[in-house]
Image (cartoon, rainbow, N blue to C red; front, side):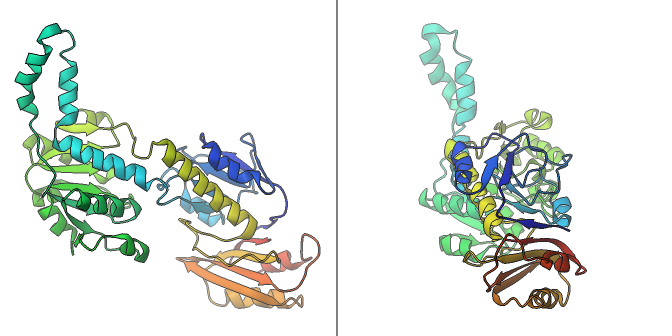
Amino acid sequence: MSTLISDKVKTIKTLNDIAKSGLNVFNKGNFIVDNDSENPDAIVVRSFNMHELEFGPNLKAIARAGAGVNNIPVDKYTKDGIVVFNTPGANANAVKEIVLTSLMASSRNLFAGVAWTKTLKDEGERVPKLVEAGKKQFVGKEIKGKTLGVIGLGAIGALVANDALRLDMDVIGFDPFISVDTAWNLSRKVQRAMTIEQLFANADYITVHVPLTDETKGMFNEATFAIMKQEVHIFNFSRGELVNENDMAAALESGKVGKYITDFPNENVLKMKNTVPIPHLGASTEESEENCAIMAARQLKEYLETGNIKNSVNFPNATIPYSGKRRVTVFHKNVPNMVGQLTLAISSYNLNIADMVNRSRGDYAYTMIDIDNKVNGDVIPGLSEKINQIDGIVTARII
């Protein structure tokens, strides 16, 4: 349990190279960026593996400049009351573009054709004739009129689906957890698959945009390949573990899967037939890195300054317009009468409550309470101790 005061200078540590435009967000306010700090208030990270790291008691928040958080021990930080943010949508356009590029290039055998052409570099004047004679082996297919199946219609999947329609493809999508915001942005022409099996059975091309979970791990396997069309093309720019690699190798060898395009190459993938291994370039654009860094920094800054939470993977989203008055923020177990105990503790100091929000997420909840009274000084003497005495409190701050 801890109570922390937001007015003090807060230290930000980065674990990867973070775009300068993102770090510039911390130029305004009481922040310093110190990558040598062992006890930072917050961390900005990209792909650095944090599972074996330990930090001091000041750590309040971690922002992943990207969508996936497999490199962060989220459960551990949740128990310590540390918010973990990600940046959904910030790299969506970059991934969308590489998916569509791969879709067209693989369909036209562009990758294999270019690689073959480079083998002719020592043939001199014979190159043009050899090209004309050899190009027949790379005859491809047009994507117009073909069916693209999109699994996961979040920020990336929705962009892919909409642009594929503009390329005159038929699009079928599957996402049982589609959000209202995404639904508003998704074209009505995207056909809805009621089951993932329906999508597998009808798609000429399949692209997947879902997180890695116990349910999605190995979702591409012998059983699901059996449902698919012959020579289906599969695009994986989400996580390598979504694919059972032994089953994929067999499906490629038999021709059931015509091509496998993945952003997650390893030794097994490199040995597979008809595979296009891309060196994890999905979100590797200057624009994407800047967008993710700026979004991550802004979310951290707002949380440290106001307690507001948006795009957390372990805390509930909760916001109240910040008036500059004292605010009590508490992360606690999601148990009965917790809010009542908090308000009682505050009212015992003759403090009026101006505004309040309480949101829960699984076993935990987050409460913000604005104090109406004008309070001098950095703290309300004794209040933090009284709140921390409540059973079930994880962390508390007075802002």
